[in-house]
Length: 326
Length: 110
Image (spheres, rainbow over the protein chains, first blue to last red):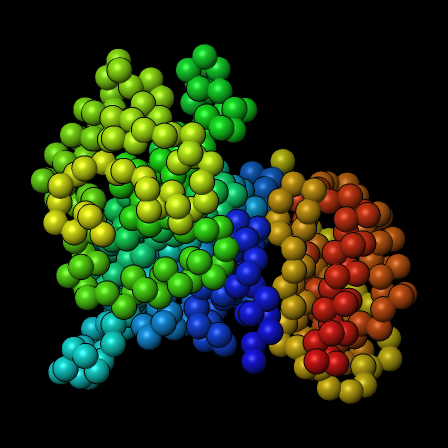
């Protein structure tokens, strides 16, 4: 039926562009882009600085269906300015989440039974270094507005984040990715606050060697984030694997989805601080020391095994919250 | 620092036949690359307009040559072509334009 869609499913997620990801994360022939390139909603700040704008300002937003759920999809493009979030890009993100909330309100007002009405989901594919420095104030504001919208969506509309692009998710967007309900990563995906290159530049190569790919991936990569529970799921680097996991999560009851949040209340912050206490001491010199602390013995095996073996055998941070064992 | 904006317009015999594509969008704005957006202009059947925005200032005559060549080899009419360029070489521009031509003909037959 939809040849292009079928072809994309078996492609590595990391190799696809933002528009292909947005299109293929939804059910076949269901995705419609909103505020697409033809609207030429470009950044007003870039031309005076000599930077060519891009017609979609580096983000694709649109509507589709994911499994049985109507979905609002946001997909960042890391090829344009490293996926940096500026004014237009950020506005598109914020309005997309508000649109999902509004859509959910409409669904609820039309149908009394929660089974029959379905529920809107938000899917955000992060591929970004965070704030776009050329328009930092607008970019920062957008970050806080996105997180504000997440809080408004809490317990109403699931926010499902995915990280599997070539840049990963760094800078301010690292905070944003931490505040979603459920985060899905591939082992190629990377998540952090200060990016490896920036750490090296500011503190020096002795502190962090950004050219050491193994070090970068075991510190910021999907496997480590899965073990520390920053990521809820780890999947293979294929479009299909991400799509199936997103559809599965979107079908969960909203209470279960909301229970996966790791920040947003005082208790949750204290819980995360306990993890920081565990990691920030002299005995932990490397992410693998932390893995050992959580009871992982054969680290080499875990590192080299395929994603499903890793997922089955990895021992994660024993946070001790209900539902943490699934 | 500022960007350069270039406009090119071509006149020719009006395009015959119906166009199937709504718009075509290819490429990315990244160092050494460009994005192209093509939109139909049904009210001006014999006209093709190019709007180029580029961060490489002072290469207007090179753009003129590359686009002249493109227009000489491909029958493109009744559309408006927007280019956002971030310092692509003429070779890369030619490749992207060739990609555009391919998309236009594929969409027509498909």
